[in-house]
Every structure is written in structure tokens, then in C-alpha cells.
Length: 355
Ligand code: UD1
Image (cartoon, rainbow, N blue to C red):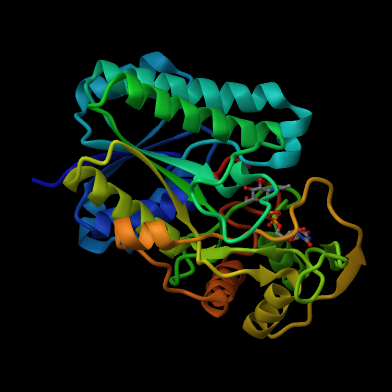
């Protein structure tokens, strides 16, 4: 009998790619996502990518803050585990509207955990973020580094990590894996699912993509005075399909071991600068990306990349794709879907899974 997995935020960027891999891995999947996400379009494409296994996918529009609806879902379906990717993730928005972030990311997660407890489902994969390392004093970041949240979004991730640790301490029947995502980029190689940000993108690659598509005149490079290889900021970019596979590795660990509550970094383990990424994207799209060199973005760290030793050792997982494949697949998605899942006039939700 195949296992049944609930994926919250399953129509989001990381969620949708994870659902494809889960279906191909023979899991039954139930997705919930917020009512205004392009849920149906995304999940139709997800089911198609999973071929004959697409029939094992069900989905519901549901907000995690609607606890009665969540109760109802758990009352009629028995889940073997939950992958919780749902959450708001725009740092600037979280600074402007912290209550929105605490309401969504904290209350939503607490509701989910309470309903899981009341239905005896105690296996969880939680999407956290490298943002909990703040401004790391050294690299690569290992999972035992001190944690520090620099904005409300980061605090929601850090708080929920602590909640996970506390509930495990109170009840050792829980099995919880916390995944700290580094910088997810790229898209499914088919080009039919990818990231769908609304408005002005906050993150580097979606912004470069819009410049390449002619929707913005240039990329502003935030900071060219860092003590890095070419003076621009360095990050750990990871292909979203590698990240999705990391969730499968985590699930296997939940089912096959007495894991307790553990944290794993999901990154490539390599540092790439803004200029290196721009140059890889230029190669992928065959266009020049005009640059505007500017000052540092407030709050930005200089250099962040992951140690992936623990995930390699204990989850038997390692990222396979490099920057070239990330840019190739990002551009393939972008050129096939220049306005994401929406039309130019209908911007879609900013809500995605965390990163
Ligand atoms: C940001 C968030 C972080 C979140 C992560 C992934 C901030 C301060 N941090 O991190 O909490 O977990 O996204 O979603 O927002 N850059 C430019 N020009 C741009 C955009 C970015 O030069 O228009 C540079 C940045 O300065 C940085 C690099 O590109 O050096 C990557 O930026 P970004 O994609 O925003 O990711 P993070 O800063 O790692």
C-alpha cells in the first residue's frame, strides 16, 4: 500500500516540484493551498508530469488558519506524514506587515501541528530556511551554527523550528525533519512548472529573468565592495528539483529510522557570486543582462553557503545540478511562461513555499 502524504503549500514553487517527485516515488499525495493560489492550473500540470501516477494526487483549497476545515480533512483521510511548505516568504513585506507573517506562518503552523496531534499523525518535514543563520561568521554553515533572525519572516521560521524541537521534547513519538533551504532556483526541466512571483521580484534569479524577458531594463547589483571573489554577494543556489528530491530523502528517513527531531541543510555546498550567476544566465538565454551597480541592500549577508555533509551522510542526498542547469531550466520555464501561471493583467499570489 502506498503511503499518503499531505503537502501544505503544494501549489507553491518548492511544493509543486516536491509533489511531482513524490508522485513519481509512488506516494499518494493530498495538496492543500490557499484559495487564491493558481492551484488548479499548477496541479493539472503536476499531475501530467507524473504520468500514470498523476491519479494519486488530490487537492483542496484551504487556509491553514481555517482549523475546522483542516480537522475535517484529517477526519476523512489518514496521513502517514506531512510536508509543510506553506508560508509567506517576502522579507521586505514581513518588515512592513509583521502581523501578517505571524498570523500566516505561526498560527497556520500551530493549527496544523494541533490537528496532526489530535489525529495521531506525528511525522513532519518542515520547510525552514538558511535565513536562520543570519549573518554567519564563517562558511560553510553547519547545522549547529548559532541561530539569529534578522526580520519577522526569519523569526517565523526560527520560532517554528523551536516549536518543533519543543514538541519532540514533550513527546518522543514525533519524528520531525527540519530542512533549511538555501537559495532555490531553476524549474522543472519540462518548463511547465516554475516560480510564479507577483509584482517586483525580491530574489535575484526571478529579477534577472524579468530583465531577460524585457520586462525590466536592468538588474541592480546590490553591493560591489564585499570581500568576495568579484566583490559581489555570494550565495548557495540549489536547483529546485534537487531540493524536491531532498524532501523524498527526508521522508525516507522519517519512515525508516528513529530520527527524533533533526535539522538538515539543503544546498549545493558551493558559493556563487551575483556576477557569476548573471554570466551563467546570459549564456542560458543568449542575451546580455544590463547591470546597474549600487550600494549594499540593508540586511544582506556577504557570503552564505551550506555545509551539506550531514545531509549527504544521513539522508544519502546530494545536489546533482549546477548553476548552468539551474539557469537553463529557469530560462526554459520563463520563455514558455513569461507571466508565470497568470496573464499579464492578473498577477498571482506571492505566497510560495519558503526558501
Ligand atoms: C533572501 C532573503 C532570505 C530568503 C532568501 C531566499 C533578504 C535580506 N533575505 O536571501 O531571507 O531566505 O532570499 O528566498 O531578502 N541581489 C542583487 N540584486 C537583486 C536581488 C538580489 O544584487 O535585485 C543579490 C543580493 O544582494 C544577494 C544575492 O543577490 O547577494 C541573492 O539575493 P536573494 O535572491 O534576494 O537571496 P538572499 O539574499 O540570499
